[in-house]
Image (cartoon, rainbow, N blue to C red; front, side):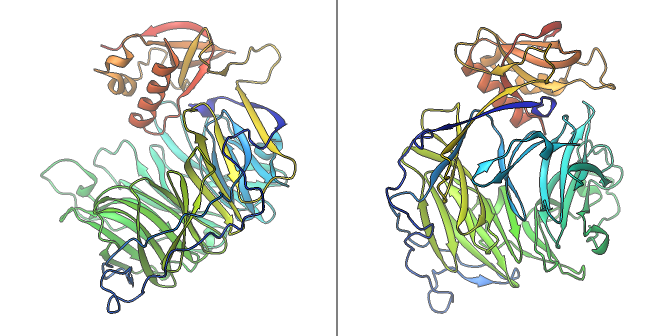
Length: 513
């Protein structure tokens, strides 16, 4: 896991063109040219987007949009790391493993004190609250065989272990900002054997003790059929979001009809069922974000891709491109989502387009306010660097982050990011813990690579580095290394493989047939 490594950072200023593209020669407001307004009533226009309650499936039509040149985005940071942008209530944070770098005065602050008290062998799942009034986070950790969730709270300049920990095997699968200072988390039993609930809802954060967590229904276990969570639950969750007014929304697959449904828990805890706005079925994936009284989800499946938005008791569905990414909701309640070369902004019943810098393909977005919007992406043809762009031009120029991995002692030779010139390419897969058997063969990895001809020259090994044991693989070239990273990340749940330039000491080889 990438969480097993500590990260060192070298920060330096570079020219504004470091991440490619062109920056505007004159200030450009973040609100671009909008498409024509769309009627809000089905009676006015049967093909229009309809605002409706969950009990009615809206008719959806994607409004035409007008691209605004030039791009309103300016390069903010360039990095070879594969971290993510996340946010607290009072600002944007760059997250890499368990390391936090808040945005301060236009630059990401990588001072280690922001992560003081956090474990290295874990991965941040969600952030909540604010640095000033009490931040909290949910992390996924484990012992090499099973995982579980843990909470941490920020007090007195350091992170302290919180009061919440999911039972062993229950991993935090979905989470959402909920009541003020509270995150709601749905944890899934990753090794469910038919005994007990397969998933649970929990409240985490400063306000957790003041809220009533919805209770998921269960039923008597069936004695026939395949052993699935439907033995003890009437539905299987596939997505979660919530709003500060108390409502919690679960996207689920009904166990009897196999249809996609939206289950709504009112602020008082009453549960109702209805179809998913937009008419999507056979869902492939659902990604959600929520802020204040607005929740938004990208729902992809049979019927296309829709952005479904909840405000003040009503749902709205907007047709989206197939490449639509996860939505982000600003403090102002505006919904954004990245799609290829554009950031799309939903305002009322119209869609606006904010183009990326020339030659940049966007992969994600985080909106803090409507004047502080950030996107991540990379130059086409360059898969080594990730660039962060913002609607505010940094006064100090573009920040360049060159990460190295490993511990900090002077006696340790630090592994470096992989390059084509590296003489020893190594993919770090997992770390050993005190309870990992010495002869453990990591069967999930074997299953993931079985029958894959692309990995015939890969050498899987248990290694030792700085007194600790790890499992990984030596690869013949960058192409195979990237393919292995992608394969393991997709097939081994909660894994975070990393391609490094390293030559750790080999203890034994692991052979997969």
